Amino acid sequence: MNASQVQQTPGLAGMGPRLTVIIVNYNGWPDVLQLVSALVAEPEFGSGELQVVVVDNASPDPIPERLRLYPSSGLRLLVRPDNGGFAVGVNAGWRLARSDWLLVLNPDVEIASGLICQVIERIDGQPCKPPGIVGFALKNPDGSTQGSVGVFPSLWRTITEQFIPRSRRKYQAGWRIQSGPVDWVTGACMLVNSRMMADLGGMDEDFFLYHEEVAFSRSAQDRGWRVEYDAGVQVIHRHPLQNRAVSPKMRVIIRHSKLLYFRKHLPGWQFLGLSWIVTIESAARGLMAWVLGRAEEGRAWRTIRDMTRRLRAGASVRGREALQLAEAIEVARPDRAGVGINPYKGLDRIAAKRREPVPMCPPADCENRPA
Image 1 (cartoon, rainbow, N blue to C red):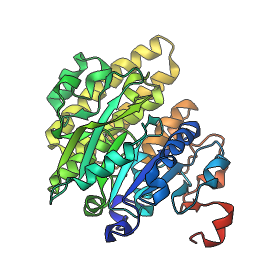
Image 2 (image 1 turned 135 degrees about the vertical axis):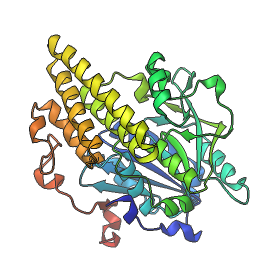
Image 3 (image 1 turned 90 degrees about the vertical axis):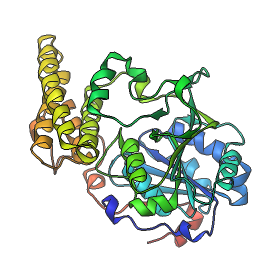
């Protein structure tokens, strides 16, 4: 389902929970269990002010039975038939939400006791015209500041940021960040106004991963919604992408997202400029990978080059297809990537076919489960 088809959430009626936490998972059940346990321990969960929605994007590992023991009125588990990406997962969670505000959290986020109270106080303190998106401060496990706010990309910025360490490339330096209006905030911990979601029709599902929150913030501001940062609310984010090595598979997805953002949100000449830069980069780095005997890396750069050419020619390469292209690299069959290729190794073929997601509930409540 495309973002344009997303329906307005019942939470807009002002009934039910004050806040819905949305957790999008792919094969990270231990992290999900830890985060859900912390959320359930918050008094707002017991009082009904907090709803938790876990959206699983077709993880190969089985669902922990422990998640089924929580009351379905407070925790909803939605199992999707395929891995549509972060935006798809957030939109699916929003459709199940029953609150005016959504708190999107990565599974590998750690929260301190009292966080939900802080967020609800932030909601209650909003002005007459509330913002559309509010980002909160991220910390590394050692307590140091983690990048969580950035400025909108441009061709010039993309060129100059290559001289900045990758851990700081996408984000503004911590000392430059202050509470108040910002260009965009990371999706690892993001408070979202449900009315703005309805106005936008959800997040852009053409993005699979990376840059979707940048596009989300850009679209919000284009529709007149404010994007803000609040340093007073903090969480720990254990495994941010910028602190991890980039695999060949992830490199394809990252390049796709950057190119897609430029094509959708910047002048055509900037997209063309970036596309030719990526084409030259993929040719040079791909050749070096083959010389060094790094076959998978070489296939990744060849895939990036071909994908860039298709985007430059006006073809549509959406998030799911980018994932298929990236997955095909690992099985050495990039020529077969596309519609009909099952990228989910270890999953049953039937489970990979597109169908409507099925909400899961405790056995005692299954007779009341939505059809």
